[in-house]
Image: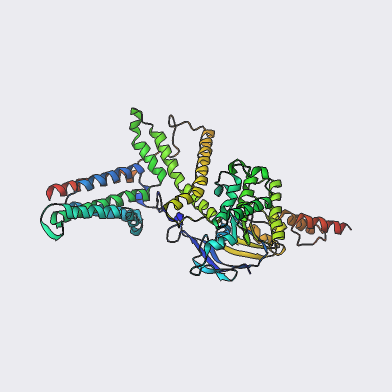
Length: 266
Length: 281
């Protein structure tokens, strides 16, 4: 039941995109997001669509899997689209009471929807093709310069990877606890809000106790292996740019130039 | 007849890349009052199977009958089933949550909607049945030892007065004395209360000693189903799937190879002792 939730969803296949350095993918996502905000006409979106389609194709992740991620933003999408459609002043196409559907509104809403959808698809392509550990490694390395201004980059990224690592464990644990309590006749579904909140107690108490126990165990295990933070720590697999990453950056440059050019010309 | 399973199939992660059979065409029957030992390697589908028996998991296909009623038919009372088929999970930490042992054991019967007096009566009986000393009843369950926690967990299910009691490795992580005590109490429940018991175990010695019949699971399929003596006569096949026969069976086999005319189908130390004494005259 609860196992069906896909969090930190990585899609384990082998592809060019999967093999790219996480920094390359992080930077690429950033470039893509910036380009979406710069693009303001159909031609520019056509370039973005082409770029996205090629990346998805290369990633070997099924499109249906990517589209599933859009479910989360359906509500936001509907609200912002309808607000823009009806509340933008301009040439009125259709009137329903005080709501005026305008041509300008339709245009803005359309671009807005595209932009939101592409934002989500673009970033989910990154999370689907990069393991959480690679991602935090990439972030740690890319943001390494913040160390100089006193930000503990390594510690923060270590906390992030531990947190990500624990999500599936705790999800599984929740599943087991729910089942153990259901076997004793617990009911997590029916009842009003207060009854439901109360029925969470037999679930949350064991879950918290187990989370704290796991945290102390992990801290102990890390100390037993002489972990003492980021200073002087080396990596078993240091991130290294390869040929495909140089090609990647080149592709970004071409893509970004294309968006800018299309924007300037049209 | 208590439980009848027909061609159960269950898939983990259906529709994703991680799709995998956890149960494959599993059929069996369990009669009232039997003591079943369920054995199999880690990941063989034992835990998945027992969660089907009280309706926590639902098979993709196949049918499951409890007292000749199909539990997958519309409107079947699943919560009622769960109080008749009591399931004790492996880790007591997954179910203990109350401030003291006694209230924790009350949780099950309270969910059955019984009166306060009845709930407390049942909790008392259950705690006495599992042999937990009364001085622990008002303590926090988290301060108890592993064996005591296990007893509280079993009492928590017993207090619902189930007809079938399923225990998932109730002796894992216990010392030999604690293990024998728990198993003897389970055996007493079987003999005195006529409970149907399904014991999931990794210990061939334990199931050989207590179970009337063994079910052996391998990769989601039922491999053997029969009395311990018959199942352990297949010890070569059992070894191939990461299991084994009780150690005493190997000693008996070695003795036979050395020309001692000892009976072949010995699975417990007591039987071996009697047989050797008989041979010595």
